[in-house]
Image (cartoon, rainbow, N blue to C red):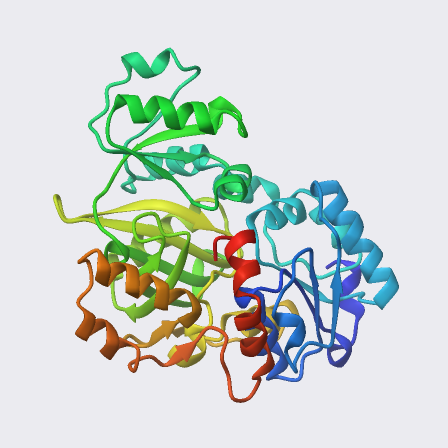
Length: 396
């Protein structure tokens, strides 16, 4: 047990790193249970306006992993946060905390897994290699050393061009992947991607057709080889429509096969903490293919509040060595983020991918909205004001 275990339970709070709607969900989850919650971000964020935020700090940039850790340790000294639980909301922060886990544990409670575990999530080359070893389906994925390899690559178009490590790619392009319909487009994508990421991190992957209705996720709090709490969800709608960077309308479902695949993967890496594994269903062969693994809360984690599994609070209780009962999220719960789902719906209708009537009915058929809350209205009002900023900074 590290030195943070000596802090009395009533003094322990949580520090959320990243204050968009995902971070807001953590702030509200813990705040509802009278847990003090601090927030730190390098962007304009809505969570700082929540009535449940104890304090909020803004930094100009987190920089590299070492700088991120330095900022967190300085904040702990400034705010007396010894024993507080860390909640990262972005992959690069997860990687930084994992790499410097031992140093951070001298001050904080750190539920992020060690680097030997996280490296299997951070780099998709490791993810797909491990999936193949474990017999978990993943799309055929090829790697290249330079542009000359593209001429000899055996591919069946269309393909997806995506990063093995998404940090640089996503922030530079505001998307998760590009589509190439022929070899000329593939070369063009390669040339563009090589401007801001190492060539050996570029992956060329068979493209599974379909939109959010084909996207599924296994979500869990995982510990010692089993899921303490879990649910499975279908995205239904996402933004952008084909390569969804974020979910806009999600429904919890029952799909035991994804539980089996996911828990096999998590046991193999001795995973601890909150996690989401993303899959895509291929109607051509009836198979579910692993796409991504996120070692943190995910955008729509507040669906758990209505489904009976409050993921952030369960993790907090476990960090304080409080007993937790095993639980499963109920099916049929719907989550929406209106500020992104409305433009997605309009675009889908204009493109003939959504029926106007069914889409409009779905707007009145949800259980949890990502931001808007009568109990905590300010973040929702601020998000509307920040729409231009969000569109430019993050592409929503």
